[in-house]
Image (cartoon, rainbow, N blue to C red; front, side):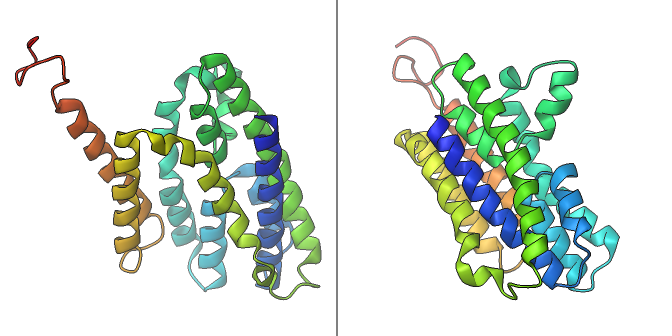
Length: 225
């Protein structure tokens, strides 16, 4: 688990370098990506925000698009209520909630390991992401095209490696494939964030349909067979 967390934090830091450098080379002040990396801690939303601002979009449009992308955190919170904590811990726990910490927590076999994985990964990302953004902001004037190094491919590669073990379950595999298909088909036609939300709806529908099906031990009406 610790090795996986270290790999995630390293990947996040590298993406942070690309993020900070991209923001600065696009003409934004160096403090902006560093501030967002601490206050938001959500790479996808921050990239969308920066992209809209640098393309000439309004601040309101950029904020709304970022919120839309981060709407995926709603089902995340419902999936790990037992590890976030309560009171002041819940405030910190929800702030460090991200794709990696949730995926790693759900991959653990019991609650104690889920809690440890969630907090270690979440706090690690909270350190690695702003650190990478700061380094990228400093190097932005030196590296004109940070994506030329392929840093943007590290993040999805690490995330895929985390979720692959869950594909052993037929329902999870089916839901993931349908959700990915929905996102891929709708991405060329919809704004940023909407394909992800539609993919989540597809996953929910598949899971609900599977839950409505009678189990092998019951008849069509749910009575013992």
